[in-house]
Structure formats: C-alpha cells, structure tokens
Length: 383
Image (cartoon, rainbow, N blue to C red; front, side):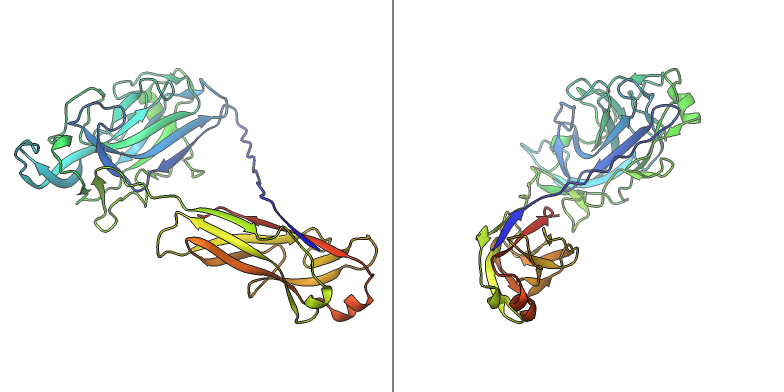
C-alpha cells in the first residue's frame, strides 16, 4: 500500500549584522504595470496627475528612533522629465482639442516619517542631486520616530510639496485624454543612493558631506538604485504608461491533489517493465491567461531510509526493502530532485502516478506480507 501526503517546507535564513552602532538597510520595490491617475498619493487636486513608481523601506536594526536624517544622494534624471501625451488646451468636457504635448514632470518622494496614515513629508526632486526625506525644506537634523520608514515615489506634473496645491508644471492633469498612453521621448531612468547620518545631531548638509550609504536590496549603498523597474510600462509596445483605470490582471491560482489518498496493488504488477498505476496527480489552474502554458516545479520524496531510491518497506518491520521506480506520466522521477510539470493550462491537468521496476528476484525472495511507502510531494507556488 502506498499512501500519499502533501507537505510544504519553509527554510528561513537569519542574517545577523554586528557593528558599533545600529545597522541601517533598505529595500526598494519598483511597481509594475503602472497607470497614471488624478490626485496621486496624498495630492487632492484634479490638476495633478501622477503615477506611483515604487516604494523604499529603510530599516534600522536598533529599532525606532535610530534612523538619523535620511536622504537621497547622487540623484540623477529625477526632475524635468519630458512626458508626451494627448492634451487639450481647452476644457475637454466642453471643447476638447487634443494634440500631443511635451510637458515636464518630476519624481516626488512621499515619506511617512510618522507612519502611514499620518501626514507625510513630501520631497519633490528639483535639480539638486540631494533630497532630504524629512521634507524638501527640512535640512535640519531629524530623527525618524518610526521603524521602518516607508517612502513612496511618484512621477507627476507637480513639484510643490503641498498636497493641497493646484500648482503644476504647465499642464493640468484632468486635461489629458483618458485611456491613452503617456510616453517618455527622452527616456525614464531616475537613479538614487540612500544615505543616513551617523548620529542624531547631524544636519542634512553635513550628512551629505560625510554620509553613511545604506545598502539597498543587499547591494552596496554606493551603487545607484534604479527608481523605475523593468516591468513599469503598462503599454509595453509604446514604452509608456496608460492614463486611465488600471486593469488588474487576475492572479493565476493552482491546486494540486491526488485522486486517491491511499492505494494498494500487487507487487507482481510492478515487477520489471510492468507498470502499476496507483493514482492520478491533478493540477487545477484557474485565472491563467488564455492560450498561455505554465510550468510547476515539484519534488517527490518518500520516508524510506535510502537517500536516492524509492523503497517499499515491509509493514512488519522485518525484511529487505524493495526498490522501485516512480513515474509521473511517462517521466521517471528522481527522488529529491526537482521535477518540472510543463504545459499546464487553465482547468484540470492530469498525469498517472506509476510504480515500476521492482526486481523480480528481490520480490520473490522478500518477506511475505504487506509493503508500504509514503510519498511526499512539495511544490512551490506559480511564479
């Protein structure tokens, strides 16, 4: 009798950093499939159009109150970004006169220095390569009271750090034509470096002269980080971002199960080249993209003592185990090695689970009685 069960394994790596003062690190996550919209982030006016392009998270190992005067240094290509889009110089609700217009946009950092839900510090990227994250006009020493500190980055037609402003950089957000693409004729490649001060008494100017660069995503902090990710464009063909309501792609979901959770068979049916089908493996995929196939990584093991062979063990506990080959469909499985089930489509995908290759002499000379094994299948989620 062979019994199947499922198990998922989680391996945790713990990295401990030791230093003379708190270690500060950061992660940056660029957004993908980005859309422009009115009133981006904390801004409240329809004249402001923008798109969130990523989130920076700064963390101190020493806890709250140990992130000192955070800022961005060596900022490049973050202001005066040319954005091209269909724009009406007259009220589009009454007299739309759309034509392509090039207009300046800028990156704006929105820092939740007191935590999300509180009023943020807003830091537009002007021409300066140094951007304090405590607010554009705040070059004083400042200690962030939250840990971690979260900062959202937006690309918008405004460089005023007042979320209630109606000011803009030459175009009104609600005068752009909705459901069209905004492009970047001169490219879109802003980069930053993240830095903090050594102590609570260092102001931003002094910090910029003698910074502690913060590693981002595990990369040395002296290296620049790209603010716009490789999957940013919602209109891939145009290398642009759509202004309109974002179309959320459904997330593919997968379930895996065996038709039978227990099965029994005659050993003679699996001797030599004989193959005994013991159950069926099922993968059910929902929300997959029509016409697209998927691949699922899986690993098959059992509870036998051998590291390399699948084995049936006498239930009595006496006697020599019987090695066997395990197949999924026509594919022979290697114990403990990754197996890739390819060609998965929406709906039900089925393969037979088969036992074969038992040595005839070993079976004839083996102890009488029932042999058993437990097959364990682990698999990762879809990418």
